[in-house]
Amino acid sequence: MFVRRFTKVASKGSPAARLRQVNRDDALQDFDLSTLVQSYLAREPLYLGRGSFWNWDVDGIPPWLVARFQDLNLLDG
Image: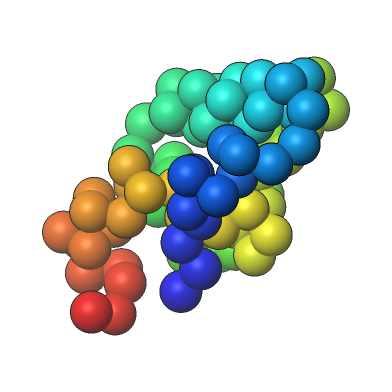
């Protein structure tokens, strides 16, 4: 399981890069839970708009979603 740590991501890169990451996270939160689960299980990227995709293997699982996935028994541990 790959869980992204926002504290490390937020401290790296330019302000523009950090803003892009925040916008991507906000776009991901706009999806309903069933869509996120289906995408995660199928390992299919989600289109976030403006040519950006959330790729589970690259972007990982954001911390705010880990607990919800654990509640659904999608994650080990």
